[in-house]
Image (cartoon, rainbow, N blue to C red):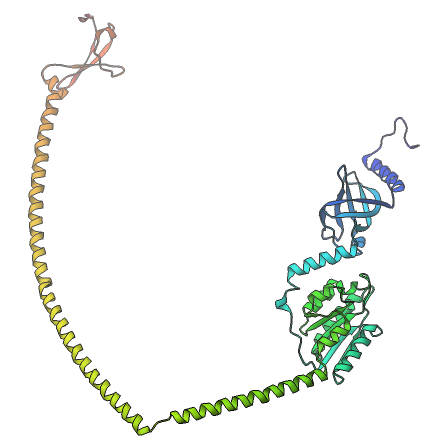
Length: 449
């Protein structure tokens, strides 16, 4: 480059800026494929990740504006194809790929977004059967959320007119595809709940591609249907088409026409059911009346003369009265015998007798303890006298009384036992039986070995 000379010295910032310019001019609109790792979504709304293969890795950033256009969420381990341009992040001096678009490798973005949202809502319990509301059997008014110009509304109205012409239908017109269609559908469900004028809500549209049906796969629609207090029937696409709305709804119909057939029974079907139930009711009532007539006749024959029944009851009362008197007498005899046994046992176990015996035993133990204690004291006194006599015999004071003395060094106080440890002129301290003295050595006489 022309800017470099033999003495050119660049700052780090200047060199980094030059390298960034070279990279941005020569590496723009690149397509890169690899596996994602270290994916992070900070609060700024940007997305940071690393794309790698077996031999290398590349830092990437997708800014907030590009992230908003993604139909799916980036996750670690995902195989991805990204489009972007190479640049340099000055603060770290690292080159990076600024991604403007991304799509899964081998799988469409919409399929990945569908699978991710389905898995997320499944974990949250939005598909659970216990949250689904039963569809009323005889709704008075039906709310339909669909396009006012599509084939779906025509099919629904045709089927409802054939099955139950007097049923009232409230159409809430919305867009069923394109940007913003999902928000319109969700808002329609919310407002129908606020109006509370319908007994069931039918949400749907005709068939189409995954892109055409995508409005019914948006999370805002799923949550609006989940929180609906009014039962929701989802009828999106053809029989083989499944959307997130189908999983969350209280009932899924294969087509809009099928939803119209499920929402209410036809007048002919109701008339036939009514006639069948009426016939079954007449037969059941006839059978019950005949059965109760036979039972009444049997009860009438089983009834006897009340006087005879009263006689039997009086006889039984006398029998029970006699058994009661006998039982009371026996119970009194048994209680009296038990009282006698307890009285004899109480006399035998009189507490005053036991107290006297215990008192004698305590006196005996006290006398014995006193005797043993006296013997123990006499024994200790005798042993004390013997030990005292032995100590007096061994006492050094006795030895001093016989004319002996203890010689110790004046300076250290150590007892002298060997003349070889002394020198002429040393001062000795003598301990006598009465008092002591200090002397100086004038001469030494060796002892016998």
